[in-house]
Image (cartoon, rainbow, N blue to C red; front, side, top):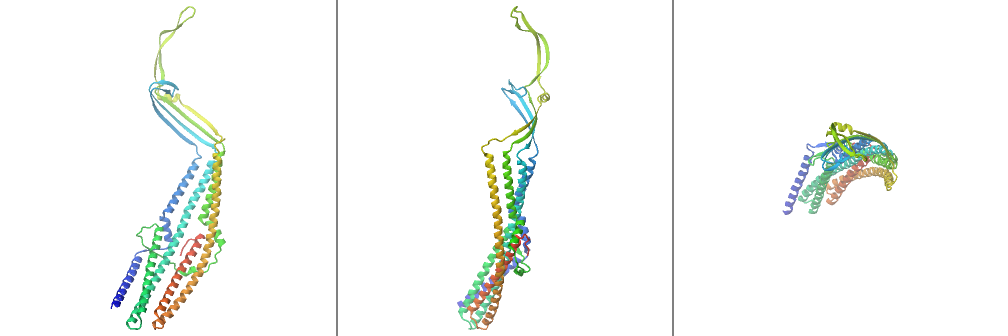
Length: 483
């Protein structure tokens, strides 16, 4: 009786689990958006913060280019100041010491232009243009890398979804087998060992379903995070319309794919632009060896509240200034009364107005070998970017060669797993027919069932692996990834 009660409880638990899984899958698919791989890519490129950061960097480089062009224009500046002076100080309008409180003011405007600077500004413009192109290419590189990540996650969802479907079907078969074994046990045609074997197969199948559900949930989460969508966003992915199309034989030419990727792949273009920018940096550093010729000019004036001017002079008798040496006669001169007043602001500005123009030549003679060190560092950086560019090309060649080998191996594996699944399916059909009439025991039946299930899972995995490998080749060929 205990055994019957346990079996009844196990049946109820199995039905509840099956209903919960079916209900969960039904809720997941109900009213959810079905997205294609193109939509997943578009969402990722639109929302991903790495792309936005790279775009900001490109915008900064664009502004640097504009500024380097504007650096060729002359400079024009104005200056003004007002001072309150106390005690002994120099009157700026007369350049003499005075001991009184006064207010001084001055103003000037100046202009300058570099006539020659070793072509540093011209080379800076060229380098900034290359750096802008490099940053724009870096945006494309990040987008390309994200696209490959999206394709990988998208394929993983398709694989895990098919794996869950196969595991669920296997669970249904295991439950049907358990029911049949229990009925035969009740009729006295099976032993308790046969029922126990069937229960074990149900438990294994339930674990497979649980693992498949967890893996599917993780793959959905990965793609959702790549798209930078809200955590509550729910979606389904669209499977390829013709899954067998990827199994067609393709005679990929490694050299052809590599030559095409050299012209289109952002990683290679980015490395080449950085090398060119480093080369311009050498020219900029060498420009510091050259003399610098510049033209300058300016206008200015000043005002002082302590500066006075003569207003009037009135005769006021005479005054003795000395006596003669012989007759001791008095020597007098006319005496005048004078009146002074502070000079007006406009008059001082006009009187003190000055102009200047100059041609300046600066010749570097010795500066602690700073220029030489800058040139050497720039050359080393240039040589390093050349090596990095070659490494990028070499890595691309290796990756493409590996991708071609992988897709060919995936084609063979898909064909082999398909043949193996068809054979296991036929073998299971024969064993099932014999099992139904009692010619095969439950252990052999479970073994055949497990072998069929494993062969189907291997085929599903090989199918999506082949499809993914083929899309990787399209990725290096610069083709849009579509299903």
